[in-house]
Length: 61
Image (cartoon, rainbow, N blue to C red; front, top):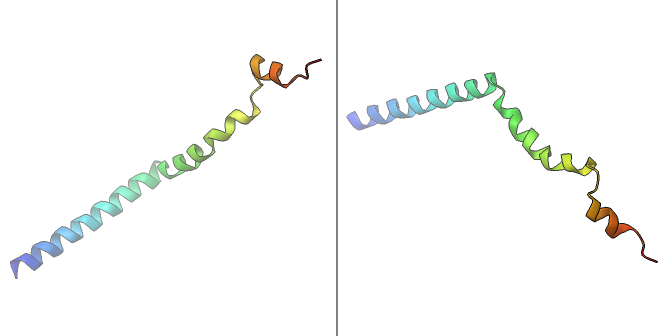
């Protein structure tokens, strides 16, 4: 019977800890970090081509 009480106590502490960590994460806006990282590779598309790339694309005569 003591094991069941201990198991319920540990389970409740895990739930309380998870809720507290979730509240901390939401308060510090950590959830937006993944959206920014997902779009990060798209930032280089507007960069000017390097000299080597521009010389490769010019037609040779």
